[in-house]
Image (cartoon, rainbow, N blue to C red; front, side, top):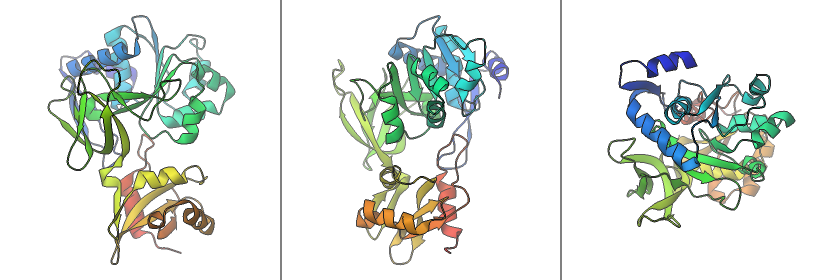
Length: 339
């Protein structure tokens, strides 16, 4: 979808807009969201970040998904000047070749892959460092990328949200004295945990009723909040990404986090059914050097986390937004033959 097409949809008589979920845990699905709720979400974000009429925002996300649509809605609702570039891996390369190359940017939203790519090119890196508020969503931010962003002179944020919450409902700082692993809910948003330890979101301005997620979290009181009972949260992993092997529960994200600094080739942790253990940990890799990876896993991981099977595959399956497609990865682990 292009910008003109979305603007036509936004300005038509319908009270809703069609969006698609990202498909990180299954097939992408269409859903209709109310324009008035999108406008409310836009105002909450702009108020939180201190964005005002005339500030400049960069649109470099696909307009097929909520993140890109919300950048446009924030500009329309809050009077931001919107600069649009192609949603590729190097959005600043398009910006630097445009008439707006020297325009100060108050607000940019990107996925981790776009940030990583921009950091590799000196001119793009410098332009990225000049952004007043950079928000990053749509995927995990690993320690290497986070360390690169820690010295940025302006605010860099990791976002938490989903299509159902009309983009983010919480942010955490990645740099400066306020840097933290804890997400701070936006105004009007409260969170709790259910019996499974999963995050429950109550955001009446953007979603009717509590929204139960699959994210296993830890909660703590929100520091310096005037509202008693408000809490911040820290993500531990996803409920559906827990492997139960021989009675031991293993969080997929925690295993990947430990291995990321040491494995150069793309990889993913998944599972396969097993007669003895119920499920076993499987590592998919695009590398052919299985022996080296096995040695690394044995050295780096707790005994119960060590993959019982390492499989070389042509490509790690990803969603259109760059996340690991977990169901496809599990299918690969199930049907790929060990060589």
